[in-house]
Length: 386
Picture (tube, rainbow, N blue to C red):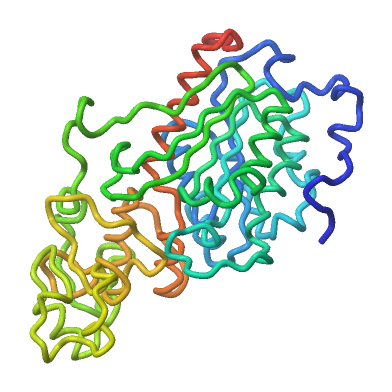
């Protein structure tokens, strides 16, 4: 490890109050240029895709997963990618990307690995080094003072050692630096994502009070109906288990054993293993009433179940296609995470599923990015049109 979470100041912060280096818009007077962003723990680029769709320039992504790095580079050729453990990345690596006389608003987006805090985690090791990765993010915020911060994670992140865990430390840190922030735990479907996926989201600003954006979908909004599975994947061509479509990129489904083909054929839309005849049931399920979503089919008229890193596996959740005898394909999973079909994934079948399951839903990131843009344009630091 080169440095810890609270390393000595880099040369960016070595001058008193940053000297003549304008690191935020309080000093630069405000401009109308589009926002720029650095995506920390970016994975394959779900947040970055949403930011870009909202008109924000993604300067760089940071992640240590090589397959995710291949995917990110393929889809964001204009951005720098740091394939590195953040604990080994010095803050000066970002200095060439963030102009010394900064005259454009800067956003830092971060989704630290969430596995230690997910409700599916049945055991939690106190020495899991992923639990302190958010602390490493402090260093970059302290040095560059981004005008906006977007944090996304699982709701359990908030509850883990609430008064002394990584999130509590981060909130205290933001307060000390003068950020205004808001934190909530909405469902992704409230922002147009066709998925029941509850997330913890935090927005922070140096440019005045800010709040989490209101829902765009659901009761009381202009879109009273949530996006459904069939709205999202219903027009993709049929394929069989183990096949890949030759014209739709990443429209590839995992193979199924003969027995699992019988099981999915016996599963109605929206049904699961409880619908099977006795001869198809697993011995481990006969005396176990929980985990009813495993071996389940999605419902056409509803949002999908929350996608995990095994989202293309029939045996690992409600990931069976609503009508075809197979699990959903990589492309269908990507659509349910609101990726455009132009977004391509690299790596093995399992790796692509992991990248998609770990991604921030693109539509969610886009809504929040648009919210940051509107907030900035409504602030006294916005300089208007050039």
